Image (tube, rainbow, N blue to C red; front, top):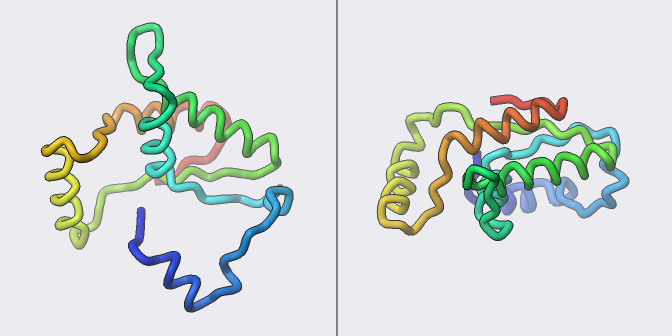
Length: 129
C-alpha cells in the first residue's frame, strides 16, 4: 500500500491536511490502518517472543495491544490488508524478492497476516482487503 513520496506531495499540495492533533480528537473517528506496515513492525520487534509451540507471536501480541489501546481511546480502527498487487508494481515486487533471496529483507510468512486478520476480526474490528 505504500506510495513513495506521498507525505511530501500532501504536505506541498495541502499543507493544512497534515497536522498533529491530540489523541482525544480522534475519539469516534474511523481510522484506516495499513495492516502490512503494522504486521512488519510487530513481527520484527518484541524480543522474538514465541508461543508454547515455539511459533513467533510478536505479531499477535502487537495487534492485541495496539487494537486494545485504540478501542479504549474510542478510536474505530479499520485494518486494510493488501490485495493482489497491480501489474505496474512488478519491478518493485521483483526487487523485494531479490532482497529476500539475498537475506537483506525480513520475510514474514503469509500465515502471520492471516493470524492477525483473524485476531482483529475476533476483536470486532473491521478488516478490508
